[in-house]
Image 1 (cartoon, rainbow, N blue to C red):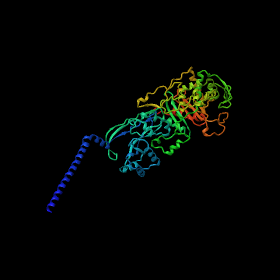
Image 2: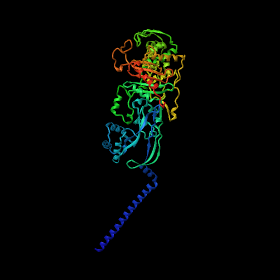
Image 3: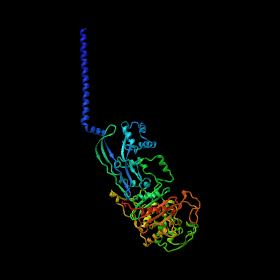
Image 4: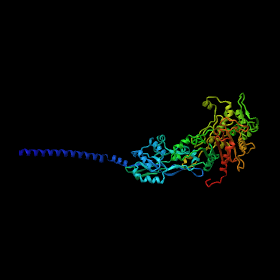
Length: 617
């Protein structure tokens, strides 16, 4: 019995030793594997994991450049950058977006429009970890509340940035345009390096036309962050390069005056300095506040403006296309007399009606009884339609098209006006291609008084008036005056060749005739020049929108709905002996050019020519 017990103990001892050896072997093997793994990670793959570690705590962040400023010709700011704080969210750092937004609504005031816009941006294509703006222009109280709660708001950022501001708002909206947030399509098309850290891009006007130079060049900084993505330390930094500043030909005071004169009206005013081609004023009304594109356009207001029959988003100065009406008569008259189709002294008795040979249609004058004995000077002074019906028929289409082409009608002659319409200076081929019909003599007759197929923009009309004031000498119509970026100053002196007349004396005669519009006994705008301390020249125009019954003086017999009233036009330049300004005024459905558009032009001429000079001027 005793030997059996000793045998069991020996067996148990040997079993224990074997088990210990196995355990030691297993532990030793595991230690060897662990040591080998540590050696592999710490020695062999040291550089790789050091880089991964750095990437977890180090980030390269872009620094947006300061957008270039825009000034008028006298150094007044038209577009600036103001400091602002923006509430943004980095979606990749948020676990429950709905819950986070609900919490934020308890801390700061957020509208349904802002929430809806945020979700729309969230679902669009964007750069990874790019902050999505939720609210701009935070108040000091909102900044403080968010700062106090920042540790509980994972993914939320309050960023200080410069945002675009247009101090003169609606008055410059169409000519300057505006910047807006980069949309999904633009983000896919833009150079990601050039637009790193940049949220806004020029959408219209000067902001769009000179986007590349206004933008500047982005910088960067290498920063150390914690696990929540907050910056702990800046390790390296390269400063961005600011965008170029632009000084425009625009005159701020004249622009504002033109805008005010169109209050309650639909129309456009464009003024040009004939000597240089500089655009002094480019106004379209109704307008809109461009600052809303920066801070966020309320959806209800945007939809209201978009659907308005007044079309406030339409730049009537460059995109509005209108019949030139009687403002075209000086240009056709000059082409007719210089081409030998008439003379200054040729007189015809016009009874108020005109008929083509073998055509029963009657083309009526605005004055039902006619003007009697009329020469070219009388025809422009009194705006005799029947004279120009006859002259156009004698000239035929091609000479009329050619003289209008030389004055810039039917094409874009500007250097930096954004997206201008070209109007229509019709040809036979144009009508055939557009309408499928041949050109008829009746089309030429209508063209003689600026009606029918011909269309022009207020900008084209002002340019042609400046060329007339210059006696055919062309400059390049432009908004740019100068910039600190010299590459922008490579502007051609002339937009197209100067107009060469067969008889240079015709320039003086046509100038005298346009002065008679304002100073002649029967001039259609003779009341407008009363007591002016300078002498100026011009031409009225009244473009028919619809056929309405008129009395012997061309006035409507019955009440006419506003949308069917005539368009009122007027062109002018002053002083007549040495023009410093040329302009075109168009008032949609305004009525008569002499009663509505001409007085507006007179006030603008007074503003520009009679005001006290400033130090900048």
